[in-house]
Amino acid sequence: MDERERFETGMKIRREVLGDSHVDAARAKRNVFSEAFQDLITRYAWGEIWTRPGLPRQTRSLITVAMLVALNREEELRLHLRAALSNGATQEEIRETLLQSAIYCGVPAANSAFRIAQDIFSEKLKQPRPKIQLRRKT
Image 1 (cartoon, one colour):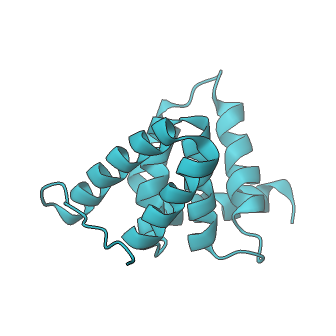
Image 2 (cartoon, rainbow, N blue to C red):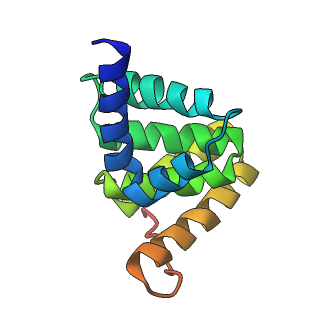
């Protein structure tokens, strides 16, 4: 695959995962300074990594969520939580990913991520923030 094809493939995947409105907004904000970065992430993050056959998109989304929790990148976490839901991840799978992140990334990071996830779930469902009750194993 040449660089032009990688860009086109990356743009297709990027739009499928993040949505047209996000991609269009990011492209509208590009300028001489940021254009090379937008090209790089489209070709390599989306055109190379997200197109690899070894993991389904849902798994890639959950891995990305966990890494963004570790890095404490709230804006990107919001974006990729939405993407995870669009890619078929369930709220339970996201919750389990955040619980795992609490152990390996720290409780404060996961605490913030849980709050953000609940906001995203509410936004997606167009209803008040859910009160998720966890059942304890006895």
